[in-house]
Amino acid sequence: MTENLTLGLALVVLGGICQGSFMLPMKYAEKWRWENAWLIFSSTAYLILPWLVAFLTVPQLRNILAHTSGTTIFQTLLFGLGWGLGALTFGLGVDRLGLALGFAIILGLTAAIGTLVPLWVLSPETLTCSESRFVFLGVALILIGVSLCSWAGKLKEVALKGETRSVSSSEPKSFAIGLTLCILSGVLSPFGNLGFAFGSEISRVALESGTSEFNAANPLWAVITFPLFLCNASFCAYLLVRHKSAEKFLSSPRYYYLLCASMGALWIAGMALYGSGANHLGPLGSSIGWAILMSSMVIVANLWGVVTGEWNKSGRKPLRVMGVGVLILIVAIFVIGLGKP
Figure (tube, rainbow, N blue to C red):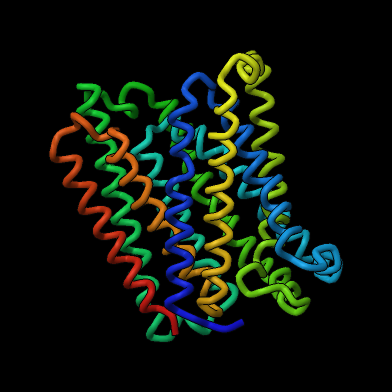
């Protein structure tokens, strides 16, 4: 595959913009419970669109999967299962620990593990080269930037609620459970990128079969998102029964379906752009690209929060802290870009 640093970085950043924006339509489906919206989203993002895009853009899709080793397919599905469990524990952990601290732990671990593990396992010889120092520095900057953005979120919550109650002091058991869930999510969520890195044989076979460079990762995403769909759909079904919320599908406006389906379109577009961009970044693409994707996603999500009024009446300090965090994440993107040999 032809390596193109500028194109690769641009595609990954565009992917981060899509990933950072995909939750936005959910704000306008306010009559639905979480499980109603998430079931439509996960069905679209993790099942329908990945396979539809793969069928439309990848010639000989069945032959490509048939000529991929069973070990690679199994590993990819296994990483997808881990990714799905990471997504579930994300929601549960943040609900107990709080948005600010929960995001800091999960995204920090996700960025670090998803960036460094492929580098360490697939390209260990690069760990000693001078360029790898930029990757390590970039990851450190991401951890700092995410922590600042999360702290800003906590300051915003305190300002808007007018309270400073500590979750850990009043609900130690809930805090311990939340902390465990967030750490578990932070460890499992990078499995999506690990599946992309370790399942690269699927993309290689697609290229050899005549698939374009831009679309070569599409069959890989179709495989890895299937167990992700199973995990999320099963949990949504459980909540629909528990909360008796399935009836909301019939009693709410029909455009809610379109809103939540658009979430899925943005999500899979982001992953497809990331996959193509990472492939253009060469052997370290899954490491460099993942770090840039995480940074871009956090930046865009925070900016959307400002645009939609989430930060109104929060005061200047939270906005200043968030601004510094976003600036550090932007610097991290450029620093990591220097790490491509």
